[in-house]
Image (cartoon, rainbow, N blue to C red):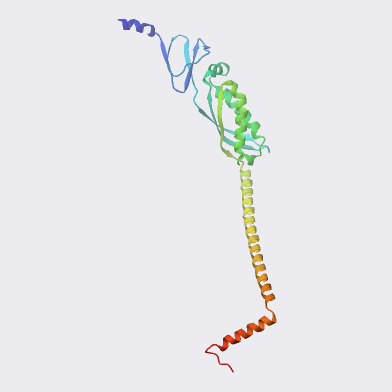
Length: 241
């Protein structure tokens, strides 16, 4: 009997489960509460009261768009925007922007920041090591515009960039020319080293010959001839007349 009396207040109540990685914002007859509830079971009145569940874990927003380059070309890029929401600012974000904040806020801000940054670079630079600088510049610009809204930007990643077909060929031709120039420089350097080796070798032979020539006087030659003749006379196979 006592259990029945305890259940009476809950018979007309509703319950909403707030999952891990979410916060719930209470909405009473269309008015949002100024605070939010963490994960768990929330019991509330079924009349005019609902809870809006909003994820606050890291989310990956993927976008495919055409970026303008400094020379007026369009470069297609696949982009990942990693972000999460500040739980304390969720009620304000819902009040000012609404639950579709990705389409209403993040997407326009990203498109504007990406276009402004990419327009500073030529198309071929977007496909090279400059990509990291482009990502950092877009990220910094988005942080300045979204930080006060409770959207915490973690990373902007340019996963793939597709250059116009003609520009691809030009970039490949340039890379091939640079590789050929490097190979030619290697060959020339090797030839220079070989020429230097031969010059040093020739100088050594020349110096040896000069030293030898300076040491062969007429007296030394006569002495060497006598020594050679004496060596012949001492040989058993030699007959001296």
